[in-house]
Length: 105
Ligand SMILES: [Zn+2]
Ligand SMILES: [Zn+2]
Image (cartoon, rainbow, N blue to C red; front, side, top):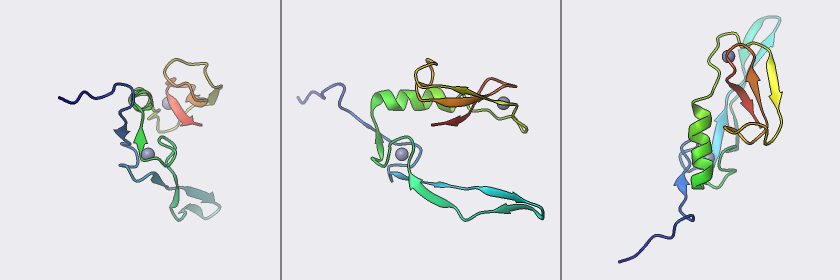
């Protein structure tokens, strides 16, 4: 019976669904109002283009996805450097209203 080596198993990246790329949408605010810019394809920020996450990266993803700010009008962005916080070791910004993450990396 084959025994899986622990620690080497990777998880298909749930963000890009294993493609290694993700599409980012952006809007530009002009005097005429809001305009949607063409979507940009970038290397997935979670798996860095690998299409898979290590168990540790996946755990971090699960913890962080619960932490996104959903305020309609987020408060002031508060910067947290690498390693400061337990739930997200990458540097990130949080919303001053709800304390949740507004941007990572
Ligand atoms: Zn990915
Ligand atoms: Zn918020």
